[in-house]
Image (cartoon, rainbow, N blue to C red; front, side, top):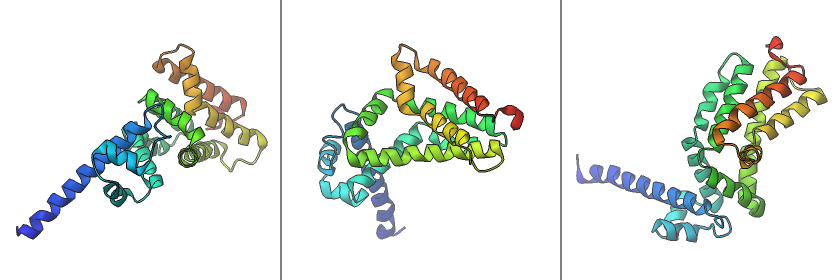
Length: 209
């Protein structure tokens, strides 16, 4: 291998290591109580021990860096398992798996999740990014309900059900149940039961599967 060919993978490895360090620094900063308020490319660069142009070269913008942090958090929290859950031929069983996956995700780092949730209210850019990702969950839930229904959700009752399931599987609802003194592990079966009850009351129970 020529010196030029050898230097290319070395540079790539160094670039990847720098990217990983920047993402870790950004996640740590967002995970603090005042993280969003001071979240900027400059602040992340200082925390990562690199220059602002280095952060910009890797991500291009504050929004892109936020999205990359969320992608990394989602990967660590197990959201990649959603694809397999959706492939389940039984939509009721798939919904149960989805509820479990999100509950496990919310508890993967409760402190950071709590700070991010609070910061999203105060930071428009963070809130927009957070909200867009939450809407993906709504679309996922609607897809499963349509499979149970055998058609698009047209009735108000079924559309309301989608909104109810969206609320039941949210970070805010999870934190409310946990703040009442429950262990995180005790929240998941409670949420699953509430989801099952809501589906049954809306007329999409297992008998329709």
